[in-house]
Amino acid sequence: VLTVQGKIDSTAVANDTVLIGLDMAGTVNFDARGTQSANTINTGSGNGATPASVVSANTLTVRTGALRVTTQATPPATTYAPGTNGVVLAKVQFDASASAEDLKVSQFKIKDTTNGTAKTIDIQNITLLVDKDGDSGNNAGTDVALSNTQSGTDSGAGNDETFTFNLSGDDQFVVKAGKSLIITVKGNLAGGGTVGSHTFATAVADDVTATGVVTNTQVAEVIDTAAGQAQ
Image (cartoon, rainbow, N blue to C red):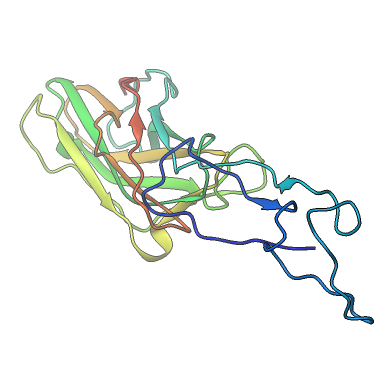
């Protein structure tokens, strides 16, 4: 068995193809000899190595890292009392079904859009829960709370705030190639918080930073404009 290996150049783009072939009709393409007799095995004729033609491997297609990020319509709009802890603020899907490699996420942003007299400072201890096995669809993993947490700081009524999670160490998580991962965003409602709604969503192009686990190439994510539900 002859194995041919190589490195895909960094200039390759999605859907480029690679085809490797060995021209058995060429008499100078390789030197083959019998292990016992040391006699030359001829190429390019019917009396030696066959077939006397080009032998090609399967066509390989270049695929790049790909990630689609969507804020889901769940949980539904719900009313909570001030002082309630562990409220599900949003669920965000990381879809790597079209990716050629596993993707590591190192930054995640989510925006709290307020309505009425709501204040972002009333949302505290915002936490991300992630299935660290990289696939929410296999029912094998358990959601784990990341150590990086954020809290609202704006006391102005009706002002919005974006929360940035810079992930490092064990907080960085991987989305497996061909799989999808659901990130659950939870938070605590401050006691005596003001009346109004908070809608959490990830909807801006640079809200997520992800790189290929093997290539370390940053992925240009597709961010869907779907918004979460008011809480």
